[in-house]
Image 1 (cartoon, rainbow, N blue to C red):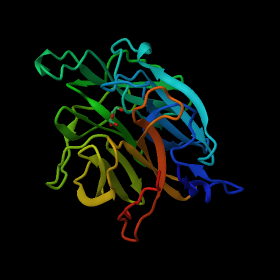
Image 2 (image 1 turned 120 degrees about the vertical axis):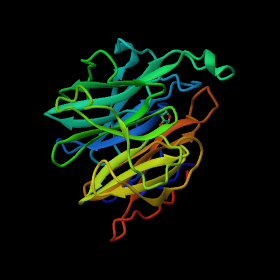
Image 3 (image 1 turned 45 degrees about the vertical axis):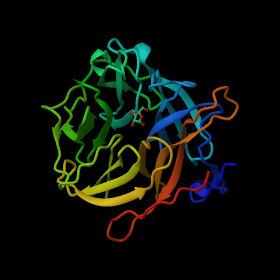
Image 4 (image 1 turned 30 degrees about the vertical axis):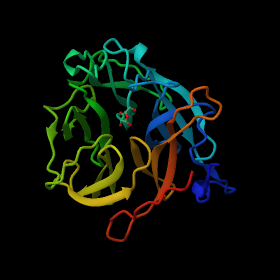
Length: 310
Ligand code: FUB
């Protein structure tokens, strides 16, 4: 039995109850939510999409959903698919989005080839980071560059952060190399220089799926440590140096990709839970997007979240 989450109590009129996982679509498996509030005042979620029973994260498209109360969601469908890309046909992994220059941008990892777990030297898999554009938050997004912005072994989990001065920063990671950042060119079609490692204050556990946001004048870099436990750093600039601050939410299940955004005065953590899909033939846990309230102490530190029960 799914617990209910009073997520909408502050947001909807009349108050309603939102379920965890969120009601994004019956039978859908959604993962890696990237949450944004755009000028239309709606909450937008860009997600990756688990195929039924997939192995090794062979994923094919990215989806968008929007809502004004976090209870009732509009499913905008696939906003970009690997079949639309000239340079990849697989691994439609965790996306992020940004709004700049009056356009919407979807940044995403994708790739091709196969990973050979027994003999890694025989692996043909590679991944790069692409960026696609649209005049609408609902897409469709088009890869106007026609090539990856950045190609390194296993490049993945890109994040775009637009600072108050309009400057855009791309964060990403590659095989065994985390905590990378670069500034984006103003037209968002290239990276200025190379991605470089940030100063993380001496604490650099393995991680994936980072997220960056700003609250007041403080920048936050959040991540699933060891791909599981959500933890965070703060800094006074978007590129660090960062100071480690501690745990936001404990691990449960598999990887724990997330995002954090303020909507109508309430901060919200989006993440995915590993659950069987009701009605699916495949009896295996896959990912479903969920949400929790997130609150801060007066000094800007984040209060640890206890997940609502599932
Ligand atoms: O969804 C594929 C990958 O799993 C993401 O890129 C990672 O962050 C993990 O959630």
